[in-house]
Every structure is written in C-alpha cells, then in structure tokens.
Image (cartoon, rainbow, N blue to C red; front, side, top):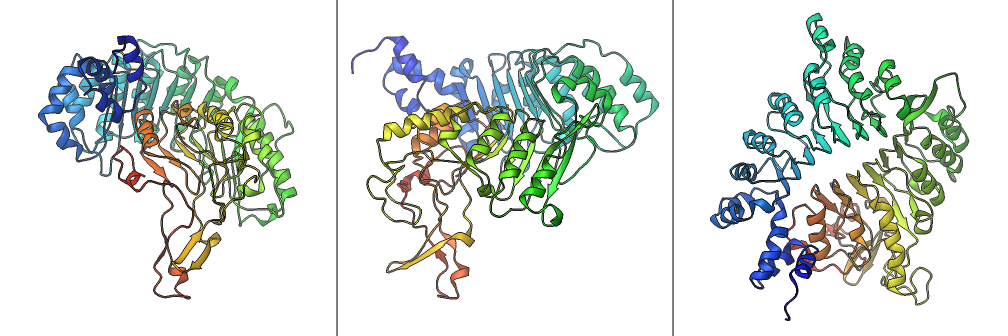
Length: 582
C-alpha cells in the first residue's frame, strides 16, 4: 500500500467506525497515531461485563496514554467504574459531552467521581444525567456544581427517568446562575412542597448573587408542579426572574399529560404566562380526550367541530388545545378531523395521539408536521403513512419533537423481490422498477427531512405486528405467517441509502423498524453505536417467530410460527456486539 500524507490519513480515520478504527490502528505506527485519537474520543460502558475490561491493565494503560483525546463519555450507573477511572486522570481530561443513564439494574455506585469530573470539566458542552444514585441527597449538590463549574454548557438534560424533588431556593439559584451559553435546558424536577413558611418566601424574594442573563436559551422544559398550597407563589418566585432573562426562547414545555389534566405553571400562572407570552402567543391551553366514553363526539363532522372549537377568537385571551388524544376511528375517513388538526398545530399543539393513523391522508400529515412548530409528541399504535413525495415537498417545523410515529412510503424499492404476502413482485411493477440509485436519491431527501429533528428520542418508522391482522399460510414445510401491513416501499435504513444523514439525532434512544423491508447490517449497527450515544434499543431488526396459541384449535402441536417475509438478514448480525439491545 503506498504511503499517504498524514492529512489524508487523518481525514480517512475520522470517518471510520469503532470496529474498523481498531483494525486500522494495527497497520503501522503512522496509522496507529492517526487512529488512536478517534478511537479514544468516544468512551462507552454499558454492561456489567465491561467492568472486567475496565479493570484490566491494557485498558488502564491505554487510558493513561490517550486521556487527552477523550471528548465524549457515555456510561450507565450499573458500571460506575468508568467514571472512577476517569476521575483518576484529572486534570488532563478535556470532556465536551458526558452522558449517564440507568442500566439493567438500579443505579448504584459512588457519585463522588462524577462531581470530581464536573468540577474539572469547565469546557463541557453537553451533560445528560437521566438518573442518579440516591437522587434526593445528590440533586441539590449537582445543580449547584453545574452552575458553578460549567460556564460553557449549552445542553443540559437532568433526571429524565425519574422526577426529583429539590428545594425551591436551590432551583432558583441554579436557574439564575447557570451557564449563559445554555441553548437547551430540560429539568425533570419539582420544587413545590406541602409546607412553605414565611422565611422561605422572604429568602426567595431576595436577589440571587451572581444572577445572569441567558440570551441563548431556546428550549426550556420543566414538569407541572405539585398542585398544593402556595404553588403559584413559589412558581412565580422561582421562575419569573429566570424566564424574563431568556429573550431568545422558542419553545417552553411543561410535560403535560392528556390523561392527567392538572394546572400548568406555564399557562395557568398569569405572571409566568405574561413573561413568556411571546413564545406561547395569546393562547390559554386545554386538553381534548376522545375515546369510547365520549360517544357524542364519534363521527368525523362532530370530532372536527370539537377540535376546531377554539379556532375563532374568544376575547382577549384565546383558548387552544395543547394535547389531543383521539382514541376512536371514524368511518370511512377522518378528512375533516385532519384539517382541524392542522389548524390546531398552528395554535401551539404539543401532543397528539391518534388510534387509527390509516384514516389520515398523507398530505394532511405532511401539513401537520410542516406547521406544528410546538409539536413535542406524535404517536399512534397504527401509524399514518406519509408518502415520500409529500415528505420532500415542504420543511417540517416540528424541530423540538421528541417522539414520532409515522410510516414513510411511496419509495421505489427495485431491490425488494417479494410483496407483503410473500409473492414475487413482477418486473415493471410501479415502485419496484427503476434503478437502486434513483431510489436512493429520493431516500436521501427523506433522511434529510428526518435529520433536522435533532430532539428526537423515540422514532418509530415501522408498525408493531398485530396478530389480529396476520395471514397464516400452511404449506408443506409447516405454517408461516405474513403481516399484510409489511412495508416494501420504505427506507432501506442503510448507509448506502443515506442513513448517515441522521447522524445529528444524538439523543435518539429507540428506533423501531418493525415490519419494514430494511437492509440494516453490521455496518449500520456499528454506525448507530458510534453516532447515537444515547441509543438503548433497536426494535424490529429481525422478523421473529410469534406465539401460535391462537392456532391450537387447528393443530395443538403448533407452538410458534415463523415469519414468511424474506429478509436478507445475516444470522451473524444477531451476534453483533454493540452497546444497545436489538
């Protein structure tokens, strides 16, 4: 192999996955020198068996040699040894990203290494701690440490897996003294308590020493506070000063639940509402739940009228739906309801659940995502299908969305040979002709649309199998099942088709590709591991056998039935050692 200039080698290794980097480091000294910084830039520890590797002398020697290259650390609290080892190489550690999440077991371990690392990581840009061992005792110290030691922090996400109670005076001090560089702040904490005396109120009214403005903050998330006495007073004292220092806010969320309607600090506290009025508009938010217990709203006309009831101005301060739950389906379609939902998306709708996505037209769903600037969650057990031609027509505005369930169809897939029922697709069939590169040109445009949703945590592009819709074929080799909803005109989810355009979804935790004709292989799994540092699970990689108790009427010996869809899944792929479940 001819020698390459150092600059070219460096560019090459920067594009390699972890597995290939390990191999390239063995080529020669020059490749080793170029590969090691990239190999050590991301450290992840996710399984209890990782402790054996971390305790070994080779790893600890490598850590000592390459500590200056480490920029991104991701670990679970089931294996706290990694943080302990990193705290031992301070102050040479220069972290940009730190993420700790729960493992298979309850969070355990000494948190002192975490605090040592935070106190020495003044250049840290991103911090995500979904939980903490003994959070009640450690949360107060954590908030004050972050405010004091992390002046360049731009993204902070705390306690996503379990709400934590913190004294209101601590929350106020943290909010008003935290990094001025913050752009995204998400706190799953509560500060309103059953008892609140005059002395606490007096202290909360005092100015906070070192209070700062936060001109860069774009998104702020805080759950609804406990509805107890003094709640509104405490909310105002804690939040009003902070929010008034955030002129650049684009989105404010209170994690409101459709099923648990409660007062919101965001819209029911008039002082706070007026402070963030520029973000919320003149809308007082409410919720709509339609299920089998509300028969008076069944039918497309009646349902659309209810969704649209606040579209006409009603006084100085208008009402608008912030969360809508539609648990019913209307026959034959829900065209009027779709149009009403598009209108609601323009007036601050944050959460939408629809039971039957099949009743919603592709172009309506596209319009909904195009206008839904405040949208935070869009879910459905039967996700609607949006055609690729519609997806690429206009830009989605829902850049703060965290949960999305849709199917993307209408993509030519000449590489797919069998349809949803296992029958061979004839040559020249629409959406199964043309060249693979022509298909991938379209796919890359779709990936680019998805790639702007950088707040996504849960993305479902497939549909979970439903035994009620299965078709069973009893052949000579025994019964097999087919899912008639199996997608054959979907994204390949391969790097060749443009999966790399989703590299910005750095907070993605789960991806569902169930019942999709995907072509995910080992390269894609390793790419996901190297780019999606918060990834926990990939759902639907293989079409699994299903429980066949429901067939026992015909044959009591049948226990499971395999899937008949012919996917090119390499059996060795299921043994690929990556850092998330699949």
